[in-house]
Image (cartoon, rainbow, N blue to C red; front, side):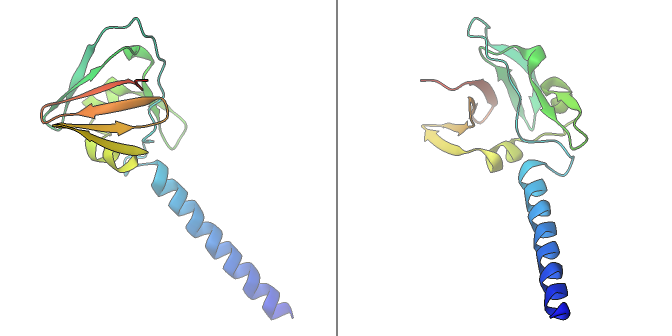
Length: 131
């Protein structure tokens, strides 16, 4: 009976370790940066240039640029601008972790909870979800 309990505990611990690794892999990229962009929506904000990432110009539309950030594994905030400059985020990460991807002509729209990223051949625009 003790061996059965020990085996059961070993299996449970092993499964929980696999589950934790899966949850980590699902949320963070290899740089330890979450794919979730924390944003403050302000409909009065104009479209604003952020920087270049993987041959794409990155813009934000109707969002406060200084309040856009990612969270690292160590629970530190990294701004969108800094993440782009340091190249710790990628368009591939954004594609992989979007909840929904919609094609609209030559635009690929990556949807998240309350924002979307419209990707073309030359630029990406991060904006609030359109109704």
